[in-house]
Image (cartoon, rainbow, N blue to C red):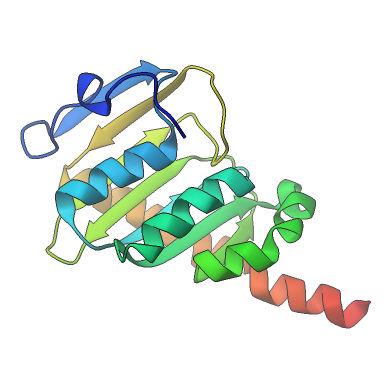
Length: 173
């Protein structure tokens, strides 16, 4: 994805800016993730979205291939299941844990091996679009802990692992 302007013109370094927000059509969620990882190092990721696209998965593939991520935990919406199942083979190559739930949130949580914690709440799905999207980015540990607990609850108590769903579908056919 080519940005129309430098991400540094939109966002300030995490180290100096614990809270920041933007409204722009110049960056995508994958750009934000790559930008965060360049500052905090290898990390585990929790991401929620309504849906995901092949183009976004390609970006994640290269991020993981470059050893920037130790694990990705992804929650998508049940209503996007048909699209998600079409991408299942690709998803399993890139993302270790994918879950389906009644979900419309768009959250990105990054916890680095060095202890940095970054929270992003965004309007954008994990898709490619040239629309104006907004996001709030925080390095506050309390914000991270709150969102992490809620995403963990969503995964543990309100979701179905995609691998289980896919196996049931294949067995039924």
